[in-house]
Length: 150
Image (cartoon, rainbow, N blue to C red):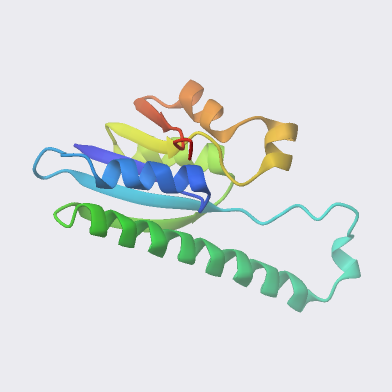
């Protein structure tokens, strides 16, 4: 079985990682962990108004943050299920597009992701990433909710 685990570092994403890590998957199962690194939209800032190094540093910070998210997810997976074959990648682009395109390109059987991510503002403007993936993916999708602390 081939799984695509989409992560963003949120508590809901961590719940999805833990869910995948603690399940008994068939032998030879593969987990592909991805995160989408998307540069934030700078509202009101003209591209010529900032020094070019600003954009380079911003891109570097987004890339470093994405790498940290991936490394955390992979280490949690390995701790939960050391026998899983895990690969990972940071992919540039909007999460709702990246997840669906990567799943199709890699021929995965299942996409697993958290029910909510980090972006309340973009969810308000553009809609939920998990909702978009559920409606556009050509494979099965599992949306993991974070368990209540109560």
